[in-house]
Amino acid sequence: MKLHDLTAVPGSTQVSKRVGRGHGSGHGKTAGKGHKGQKARAGKGFRPGFEGGQMPLQRRIPKRGFVNIFAKEILSINVGSLEAFENGSVVDTQALIDAGLIKKCCDGVKILGNGSLTKNLTVQVSAFSEAAKQKIEAAGGKAEVI
Image 1 (tube, one colour):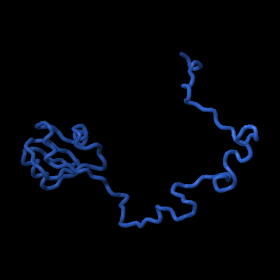
Image 2: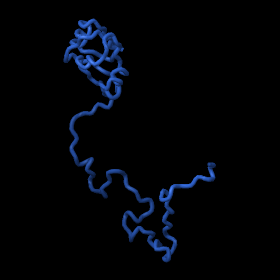
Image 3: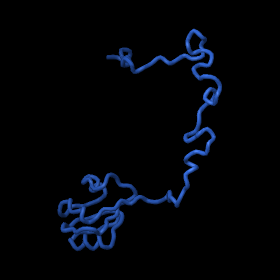
Image 4: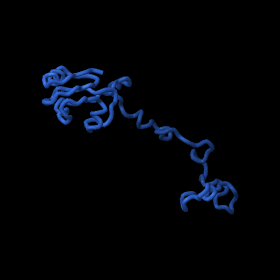
């Protein structure tokens, strides 16, 4: 098969409508735009949310509070969830993703102290709560901040 043998799948392409080419074409005179009005003018097109001059919904709804655009998204995992790992293994963000405990690493991962841990693990994440750090070290593991 060569490039000149390739053809489009039937129905995947359509001939474009030729408008404004006389009465006989069926799309003459107003070229399918009707009579007058904003949508009949050249350069028509409205920005998203435009409601014809009425105050848009985005501006009618009251705004409350403050959204910090610089906030870091820290994922939290409890110590009890780390029981899923083998004894003596190294737990980092990639290991947590592979185990299915988190979907993706945003700006960091913090281990919280809920639950209990019996395995000695080397945990390498962004942050630990004091309770989580104590439980990991009590089980014989290491809590390393990266």
